Image (cartoon, rainbow, N blue to C red; front, side):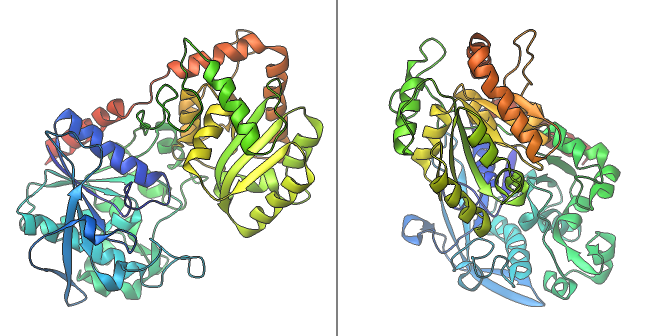
Length: 491
């Protein structure tokens, strides 16, 4: 099949979260199966033109009653199969994308012209296809910045050059929908009848994702459990009604992980590689982790790791909230060590710095480091993810691959990938709690620490069970192909 991925992010070119990893990894997995894959991205300021190849001539994009002109650059996605490389095309529009930040910057988290920027991007996707003379079987859009792609396909492009093309839209995080003043709608060049028929209207505002969910031929999100949760009022972010209405075309497909990057048997960032048959490298990683974060070098004390964005979604209030968060009590009452790598809300960063100063067994590095993230996954005994909601989650799967037992809330993709510890049988791959409260987090961490000291043989068996799980993208890619084929069958 000929499949085009339309996304605002893809590693290694642009990334703010798991969306970028998923788009590139899925593209590579599909290409390895034999499908022809192309990705279209904006060319942001940080993407160096000198490393790309420019296509001849500029490209006109019909928006706002006229045209915007842009250049188009291309390259191959790193890691592509030699016989079937994934081509990446970049929309080069200096006014819209020649700036720091993908969606915003610290002093302007959501650029005022984002509705125009991504309306232009979605229109440009079709023009790129025309420019290169390549018309896909499937247009696969990812999250709200690309959600107008299925809208433009259904309300215009389908009647022209894309009559045989179907669309799919993946929700990576329903909490971000692209809701803006409807005065921006005129820039789409669509009629106001489409505004209401396509479902743009959201309390007299313009909702990109809602329109995409109504227009796309097939919908999916990144785990089966999150697909169920998003059809409820608790996790549906006011779009649960739309998703229930489209439930026959909506499914959950669990993300995979890149086993070439996240694999303890070939990881270049840890002191010594290891696997199921020889786990000694994990002890070396633990010693290196303790040294890196300035913790006492004690192999017998359990280490709890965290790598997270310090935002409300990740449950950081219940862990680090001043005067009520559980972190202080956990470190004071339990014989353990805690390490954290992350950045986000200023109040949370300040509280973490304070805890790191006051507690001898809690250390944190504010920011992000690829090397330290691998060291935390390999050197920790447990990995804490108290998410308020989690569409899929990747770190819990990384943890399982490295023999690190997740401590997670029973939600979204966490529930699909972690099996709760059974004290009677020793079965399971982690420790789970239901309610997002400081006491629930405290008690579950305490349960894991208790098992570490009192059920060590069961802990070791759980490590091996987790490492035997396969979270490769090959399985996920086959399910995406089934979704594409179902959309084409309806066509």
